[in-house]
Length: 211
Image (cartoon, rainbow, N blue to C red; front, side, top):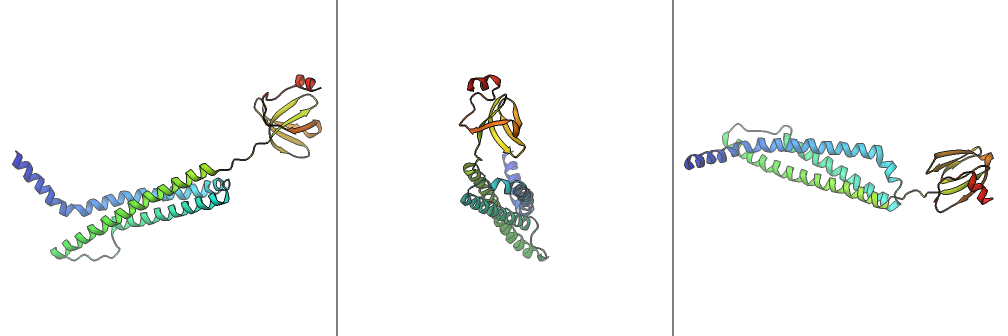
């Protein structure tokens, strides 16, 4: 039984010489599909959300993140092209019909496909790493818009919250208890900035205390 197994393994090892190139082609096809998907996903994310997300960064961080994303995109495209080369070979490549010529061509092609797959995988790892670096940089340096807390006093209430906007007719305020309030400017008696809104929105009782 052991001798039979040994012979079978020896036969499989000899068969690998003839099946290695097709196996590498199939691996390259998988890498090509994955890299193409990553490249398309990165392009869509950058087009849809990249500009809005980058505008909140400081100038140096915005330029750095943009450079990282562009480099990652180039690497993923190059990796996709290398995977295509590994999966499908060079257009118009000549294959001689002689047995020894075919063997030499297969050995050279196996070497080229192996190198192309190695470079494609490296481009994939570097591209994903650069995208992750750009995301970490954006997360760490995003400038959050300052919150403008104000206390607004009208004839019958005192409202405290984030000032959303104001024009000649209305004043918009976001409060913790009542959501967004839109107060007519004609009823506003006083507006002053505050550090916090501990009590949220108050009513007639607060006005009476402020008296």
